[in-house]
Length: 384
Image 1 (cartoon, rainbow, N blue to C red):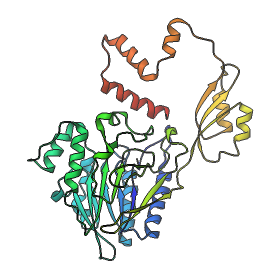
Image 2 (image 1 turned 135 degrees about the horizontal axis):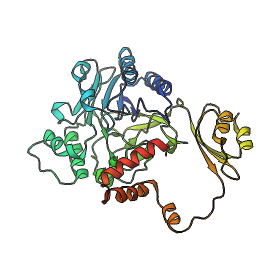
Image 3 (image 1 turned 60 degrees about the horizontal axis):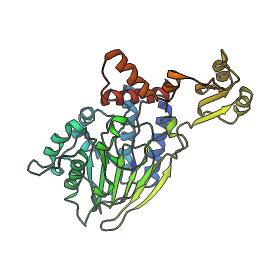
């Protein structure tokens, strides 16, 4: 059987106020073509389909149009919720779409209650069991465990509980079926980007790769935006995000994973590059040097460092005349060495400055959760 693994679409996400819906649409077009050309039996979508739990109608339409285009090609789809998605909104259509071969799972469930999806091959000769684990927040972990097996003795740590849930889901895998796991989670030690929410990247949320089940032919993950293979007991990959979502993802090769597997045999995987989506690029130079670069950057979105001798009023506007796609313009010039308190503050990052400001005004340090939220908003606003 053949599968296309993709994840972290974040449909609806903007970049400094710029809509990217045309880029998302082009990337989804590519995935449909890859699936058709590969004669895929199913597309596996590993969560964070939308960028917001209150997705706009145009974002919903883009996703459901994608699913509709799989139907006449007899390509099934298994789609799970990530931490950006609204699980109840996704689950609302599950009963309707299951009969069409579109299996949407918004919330964790036990193996017999939708947590394991049976997907037949296009020719009807083989069957896949796809165990699914949507994102589980720390506050919902106990409830999710009880859904899996109320009589089971569960560990205390979040990561150990997630690993146990995966083992429960995979416990019914058979040598006569193709066995796949699809989950939205963090693996300890995996390479992260900057588009993921910091609150969901702490080690408390990270599962050790060696805790993953060893009886799956492929484990497809969503959550981290950098495409990568994980060293684990079963072949395991993060598909990565659909396009370069922020400047922390520049120069990443976006892709989907093509998986081919037969019952009882190791899976073969292959990366298929995606070309849709505008590139994000850092450029540096004097105004004259930037003018010379204008013909080379095409439609790329730019983060610009312009070298000047001193602060220059209106320079950002002049840069944008030369480079219309410059989303961020920073001046680079020799600054006077700060002294005293300015020197100390200059060594602090944005979150540390926020923490000092909060304590000065409120007489108490901010909570770790509030600092995490600040980092999330700051990184989204700054594109870092």
